[in-house]
Length: 83
Image (cartoon, rainbow, N blue to C red; front, side, top):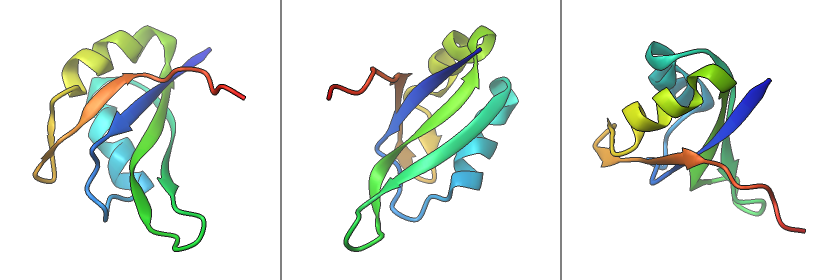
């Protein structure tokens, strides 16, 4: 099973690969995605990293407040979408 982590305050030029690579030293990354604006295609400054359940808490602790390309990122467990 996997958990999804919200990652905020990302630099605008962050790629999905760079985001996943930043989390890999702390556990198993299943996938990553950067959320983009539908009209411009530009990053909205946040994304999600899907990780193994066993690694989720450790990753949040290690990465929340981490300096990622000059910006302090915010990491926490993603909340389910409200429809």
